[in-house]
Image 1 (cartoon, rainbow, N blue to C red):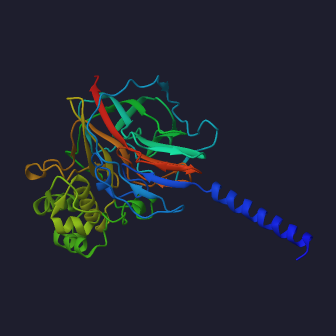
Image 2 (image 1 turned 180 degrees about the horizontal axis):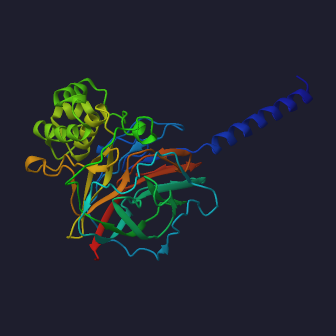
Image 3 (image 1 turned 90 degrees about the vertical axis):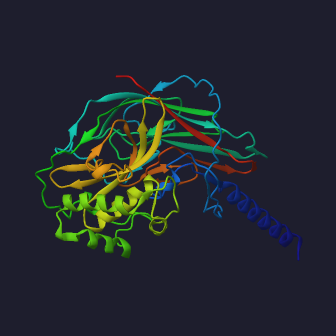
Length: 414
């Protein structure tokens, strides 16, 4: 080989090496640590209580590893940084680029004519995500990006949300979208993020329901809320179809079927206090589950009968200043609107059917997803009850586990 040929070959090798190195460094290594359901809309059991344990799945550059952070004992919280008011319609980050767009079918409708409202009460709510680990670090050069999402309740027919303030980040999603979030992006893991808002909630009761019309089966609402929704909501499951027929099927009007299905479920399935698995089959085998599983079972029965039904993620605000994480469904009657029916509230003679008590705070609801930049790519995010977080790094290495916990406190102000 001549000297010129050797030099040319070395140049080609050097160029190929540089290109390969650049491609390697431009693609982030990603870890995804979600404390609540992240892109799946239905596995409610993942986000209904303080996360505990781990749930690792194999991942690579294109398939991140998903883990839930372990629960930690409560600690004295540091004082949050100064707050700034939240622009009501803001959907862009500091660089001016849109960080979230909604592909949801809105379930918001005019207030139900069938519901009578009790005395409205306004609560001041403080939601915090606090870092709990001391071992996580990124070293060896390169770049790290951490993204945290906190659910922000929407303004809907069942609640009014005002005075939203936060210590960092940007709102993603409009005030009336089914789901919206506070998105925080940082080059290092934030120590704490604080979100505050006021929410006005009334107890509801559907003591008299009339004016019900035939469903518009071609409407987006009907098509969205009568189909399968992940491993827990399965209207075409053979066991669900058999139960629908046993209850009365299409021989019953939608309202009467919903009432009988409610009583039927409460007679045959129990509130077991915790999840027994991520699928409807797990719920059926266990003979019940937590509020998320019982809600999903009821939704499956209604959707199988052709009755639109949705779930809500949130919690019940209490006079003590704490909240109880909770999930519950509503069903839809054409001409009457959304009707509450919480199958995990066991009261004599189905006393919670058509009713919703004090302090039911909706943090997110069914009906679609929001496309959100999670640091390394856009993801479709469904309802989140507590928080979700991810990190990505370009170059260098990470060690330790990045963990957070969620705390929510409330004060009834009027």
